[in-house]
Image (tube, rainbow, N blue to C red; front, side, top):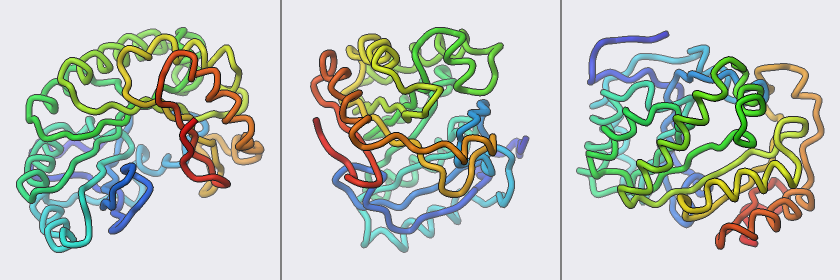
Length: 256
């Protein structure tokens, strides 16, 4: 694992200069950070946690790129991997982005609530998206994250992270990727939605997709769930959460 011991150096996995899909209603640049504590078998970004094609870059150089691009964008989405694995340089990065007058969105899996508190204390985050991997029991969650032994711990940390974000008042998107055999039943979605309803502003069901391959190659052979399947599951979540959406290749983002 990359450990520079410095708060001014990021392990960077890539940059997308312009995106219209990573921050609802906004145009953003996307920064991919390397490293992740999970090993989700269906993960498409597995090269990031293996630190393949990653490079150490000074935070100031990333900020210089963002500044050059700032006339074209509303903000920056920082994703991974798991950005909070690099909490020191992440804090420096979000402060710099905010100093440029831009919006900041952070994607997280919720495994690091204490680091999340440090990030929240910067008052620089406008939008969080937190991944809820599976129904909230240790066996199901452990299977989804690819490390069965920490399933219970992952749920505990997730719930604490939800509370941290909610208590600080930042906008919070909960999202679940619907993966056949992992999380794909009405009972799964009912369990998740009823548990997180008090914390999230919106809840999104994402379509599992196989472009680029998956950590476990067998998942690359799975047929993605249909738009109709996601719409049916979204109606289950709608019983508990007012703003429910689906994201599919066929329909883009749709509010239910």
